[in-house]
Image 1 (cartoon, one colour):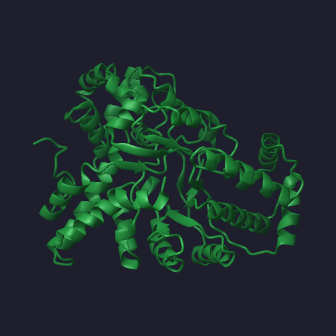
Image 2: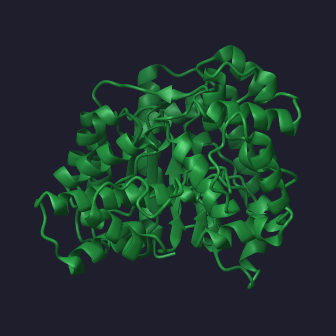
Image 3: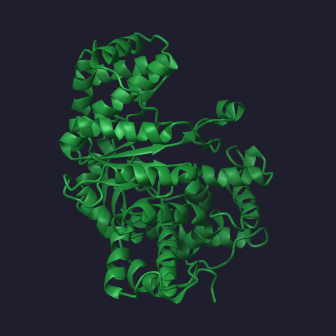
Length: 468
């Protein structure tokens, strides 16, 4: 039997049946990823498997460094062949790491290759994949279509022209939609020079002189309107911490002027202005019936020597911790709710220690006002929790404290066009978890309810929640 088969990662018969009968062939709504709209539009073929598989994949880069591979063979100038060989040498050390099943799910699904990649057969696998890459089925658009994707939401700066999103929207031949996501990281940037440069660009782009907090709100609202016109229905934010500090409008306006003039703020002032920015933006999202995503808990670029050499998103990030998360998270959502500015919200926690804090917090702010079930969502296990253990921890915390039936499910959070098998990885884990409940007699073997639950989590809830 092949390593990748219909019972892979599922250790009970009920789960195997749920996976094969319900989950396996459901389409994908990828509501958060880092794919490039330009790359999708230009639809250029890949030169080799190394370009497709290893370029920009900091998950693989971290594993290769841990395996003693030199940086030249990771992000350096080594040949594509040398880099692939180095990755193959690393794969055979990845037992227990999600990179091992991900690698072979991708080989099996996209390349019809059931060989277990290792240091002995790397050339055979590489040549097989490189031959396949010459086929039309391996262009970016073809890969997305083959993956059963209905919608892709990219991650985009408020200053982005969205030119390629507009071009893609005009292509009636596409079987999927590519929509932008409003990601205003620069609004929260603590570096004075970077922030002032952002404001200058925002002012020029909107034709709005930004001399006050009200001016800023008017300018950012114009960009949100533009994103909305191009099909955006979701925002995203990536704070290192959630530190909510309340302040009156006069105090916020005063701190904003200091930041606007490039002055250095205190830690408390940063917390005040960041809290105010979340409230300001949430009001805009609520007005347009958008969903707001908050991915919090990453501490980035920790190896400063390598950051200066290689740059961002290169595999030198970690899980963060913080004090008073529960009070800050509840305080932030409560402030939004009190101002009637709490949109549909998805909270992604990177530190699994806080899973129950997040799960109990979202339960405090659920309502039927948005016309969807569970408008406040506990987002799927992401980044360092894209693992069996991480996903099961998130699923169990949500089931314990809320309604797993209403969960909007998995996303790729990836820069790779062949990472859609992570949805399959998630679906296997989900079916194994629920199938285990059935076989232990913890829930009834009611196929109607179980089928609805799997369909909801894998596809239908996301479709109903975002209303793309």
